[in-house]
Image (tube, rainbow, N blue to C red; front, side):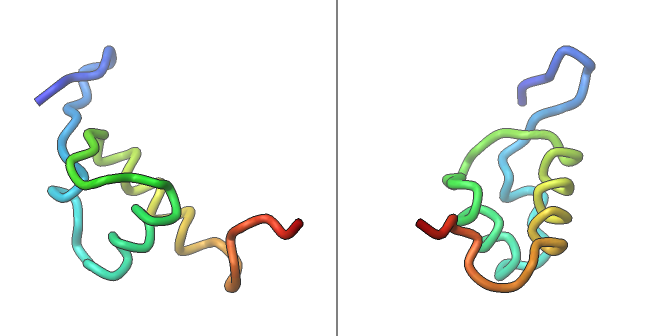
Amino acid sequence: MNKKENGEVMQPIETFMTDSAIHEAVCLRNGWADGKAMTKAEYDKAVADFLAAPAGSWRRKK
């Protein structure tokens, strides 16, 4: 496991997964692959941002 400068432990994102559907959606939206290392706080923020996003397409309309 890697550590960030502030001492937070970085782990594979799969270790933080509590709901597989939300996990897959967050990974798809952020372009993350299995095994990406991050802190629990970063993962929780990404999940919260996903859940707070408006319904519909997140892609920009051209």
